[in-house]
Length: 365
Image (tube, rainbow, N blue to C red):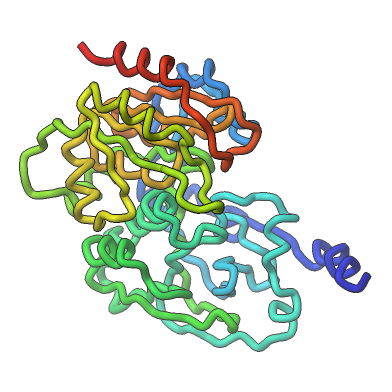
């Protein structure tokens, strides 16, 4: 009963604000990346997942990214949320979960209102984001792109920028941070059990939107110049990303994968288990891709390294999650999709071999 009572009153202690309310002249701030507009009329005919229906538009426009500096902000490493000095959640610090109720569940009310925050002086920013952790998609589409702002000319003269991080970095994160952080940025580890008061926060805006992996061309040119292999591209790899059921906890697996791959093999595809490849090997593999087939999942994020390929994305449900449609648009790929008939996105499923072969066959000369 006490737990239920606490859950009921929790939202009353939580309120939201946004960067544009804290920075009243946001529109006069220098622009790091202007909005980019792309035609997306084909998505009007796609069976989108319910929560992504708002993306059904003839055009997609990327967020405007401003150079935004905030003072007297609080940071909670346990949730990777930012708070105003009045303890309002800065909703822009969340890239995916936008409802007050969902965000409020992650907030430790006692810590927020009754603990004494530890001060971090100087210029700082936050690397990870709320609810996204070190997932590969969110690393490459949310976290890493935000670092582009730190290269704005006005930050080059700063002695040091502390990049706050609440957990040990993964090998993938280390790989990209070594290549993309400015020279005056320093990773700074914080304690998840504490609350911090930030003297000066460089707020990093998102370059993409919820359910949409589209990234601006200016950013992509900069990013790929720093991470792509130093060799000519050979568009020769026909890649099938394996997602075979291994344990009872395996999700979004193709139950008839062996039969499915027998079909793909006739068209020159090779099977890859991406978890067994290093980040360097994955970049090289997709850098030379011609055609990629895979189930909706983080491994498809690697198409960011490819150029004008064909992508066939398989969805367990009767609807699609459009993350990789938009990422494909930003890389000028040809996007194809096939849907099973399951009711949940993480359900294992069987592929209709005849339908898939027809799609593959019709996309080769």
